[in-house]
Length: 238
Image 1 (cartoon, rainbow, N blue to C red):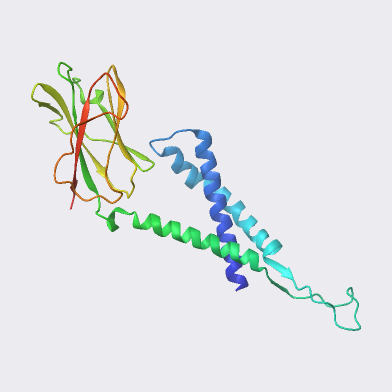
Image 2 (cartoon, rainbow, N blue to C red):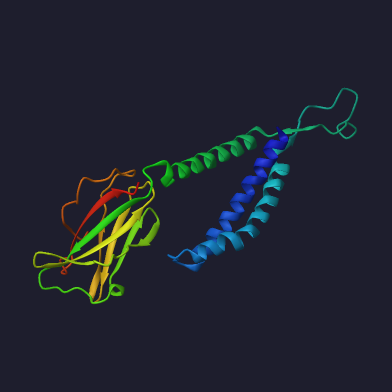
């Protein structure tokens, strides 16, 4: 039991040091949407914190995880002459370690079940934007920037070859993106030349089913004089 708790304490220290140092580097570096800084911080700098955390975990176990028995010395012996009492596990320390391991295990299981392969798999979100009457489309696809926010990640929507469309007298934009995580926090933003960025929330359950058709047209979450509308449809890739 001592070996198990000592190993768990060292493992927790390594995880805490690794992730803590990597998170500190990412926080100090600022926003990083392409993930380069986060990857470097985790794989290049994180191991340094992992080694320090491993040592700290072992020290904490030796310092607080093992305590001496407080039984009195045998009759006829003074406290100084008595043989040193064997050390035993500290119950509060053991409880803290086991609860921490249980919490990390639950978090890992929760992240695992959010894997696309264990839900509906990767799903395609088709997003269409309808411009107000008289507003023209950009000439180049590079001038259209559509960003999909899912949980805490960001992805750029793709524009097909026929991305320039129309709905009667109104110009329209067609785009697609992949959804992969269980989350209730989804949003899409559109940025066009000389037009302020507009943002819409995507109202879907955390583990959504394909939608039978497009949602109703809706304006941006914050009122905008541009008057661009958006609707979406979700389909299963399988």
